[in-house]
Amino acid sequence: MMARVEDVVIVGAGIAGLATAVALKRAGVEALVLEKSDGLRATGAALTLFPNAWCALDALGVSQHLTSLYAPIKKGYVTDIDTGEIQEVSFAASNGNDPVRPRSVNRKALLKTLADELPPNSIRFASKLTAIETQEHEGSSISVIHMGDGTIIKAKILIGCDGIHSVVARWLGLAEPVYSGRWAVRGLAVFPEGHRLDYNVQQYVGLNRRAGFVPLNDKEIYWFFGTSPAKGTDLGDEPEVIRQEVIENYAKDLPPIYLDIVQHSDLSTLSWAPLMFRYPWNVVFGNLGKQNITVAGDAMHPMTPDLGQGGCLALEDAVVLGRYIGTSFVQNGRLVPKEIDSAIGKYVEERRWRVALLTAGSYLSGWVQHLGPGWVRKFLRDAIFYRFIFTKLVKLSHYDCGKLDF
Image 1 (cartoon, rainbow, N blue to C red):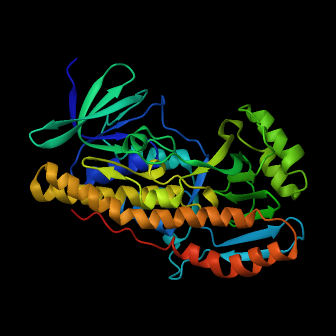
Image 2: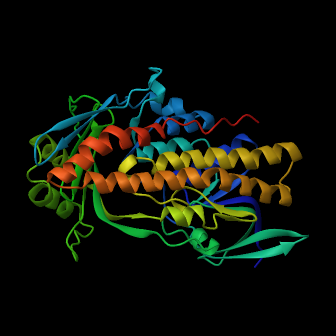
């Protein structure tokens, strides 16, 4: 069978994959995106995009399509389930500029916005990668990609954006993600007549529990519930069962407003899954790239969702990788093998420490916020973490990954 030859192949049409394709397109580099699902994936229902994500979306030229649909978040409130005490967290940007405030967006809307920027036939659905090998051609490395249907594709650059259980990351030798000890239910509630709530983040924390919600627009609210379930607990994949378990068991003592939001869930958006992450030292010392092959997004830095940075960092990855590859392409008029190796190497080194730090910070944030009653735990969480550590972690989201000026 004759192999099809592509300049760039991106595995995975999630946030990282589509954003990387858009970044490369701005430099004139065509990329083929391979997605194993039959359509755009929307697991997770929604996500909050912090200032660093909006800077990346600005660089990609698409932020205006989303800021017109979703309102900025100004504040967050954290309620101690056991004591009823409430702490306020401000998310307002220091310069008062609305586009750099956090906004929660529908995940599918974000994916569609990115996909709409790509040329027709850039995304090939129902395309499962089964194996990777490399060949030497005129002194340079070519990736040979074997697909589930027997198709063989050769690529000058291969970028794995294929999620937590990445085939590309495994080929690079990256350590497998590990279980954090927690699971999460996530969903999208819909109020056809409007919910009439303020655009603030509401969170509830207690022993082995963390829940919350945030409005996306006047009709949709994203909600979540995280816990450390007893060994063997499995809510399965039936949305109705998951919703009832949250209402009648896990969250039965939470405020009525939270339970009402869960009750209004669009069942097609519900998911119950373990929270996985890659140990930060495996990111710092791991092989994130080799010659013409690298990874981005969850394939590089799977993390717990406690700082809301997984998708944000994926967008950063796309801009940084697109800038290095795009600059080389523009300067040389084509993809030059030795320059490709250098571009990927620079990308890996720029991203390595930042994503490892936020992976560690996210895990720490989740662990602290799941602490229960007791004055020592309360002091650690409320007096130390929220007052000093959390504010420093939030500052990491006020980051500009740069522009794409080709």
